[in-house]
Image (cartoon, rainbow, N blue to C red):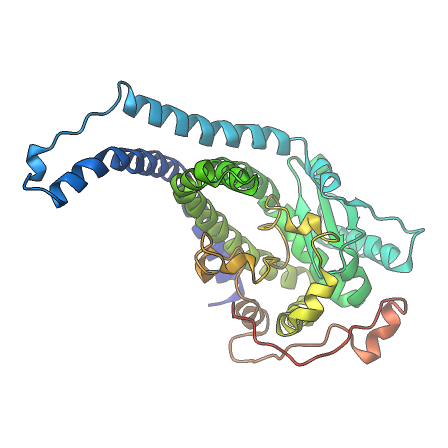
Length: 374
């Protein structure tokens, strides 16, 4: 498949997946109703199992308005939650970025931020694109970035401080080109709308999870069980849409920079961090990178941020790969360089590139570990 084929394929598959949202809502309503109906069938099934009665001899009585109540409550929670979150996100990309702790990039703060602003200007001129506001997550030392916008006027590109510290100019240019592609293709509006819909689909599950965290498992666990279908549908939809947009943004970044090694080296450094999870955790703690861990933006990020523990619990299906919001790094690297060219992981800090930011703290090295997600 050629470069242009990848772009066309990604666009076609994305719109087909989005068309499934309405069917998912109907499926969740039907699934929740069937689960609740099963509760009323349990006594009858027990009677059949432990007596001489046959199934056709047992009658089950539902409360008045049972179907209408189930459909109404679930629909209200799913669509109402989606509407509320969508209304909040419609305040724009800058509002969302500030909620996550980002600030505007300031050339007076450091050479790295001045370089970042210069790169944004260069790529906008080359792509003929409107200049977004360049922002920074100042406490996040991981390698990450995202773009957000509801309208062209509120578009932002946000990079982590780690990306400014540990990436060379060409590598940072590849990251910015990737995020600018999301703005150019309309992915940011799509992703923000999708975040609202996903919030609605997950609402029952998350509501039950909140009760469990408060110690009321007797009420919370059944809600999580009933809402789990919504969570599963939301994650599958979000992941499938996001994966296609990441492939498209990677391809567009190569088109604009004409340098596969720019974005390619960033992905290979991320692969090194995947092999050294202790070093990755040291860079990206929950306290420092709360923004990147937000469910609202996890599918918008350059790189996936789920921890091993989060992806291996009961409710999350043991970290099933098809629920991942991003393609694997190996797959993305293969598309950047070509299937026939194998490329190895690169250390986060190259000795010859240490001059890029002499104040970045060196990482302690340890034995590489194979992540169970790979």
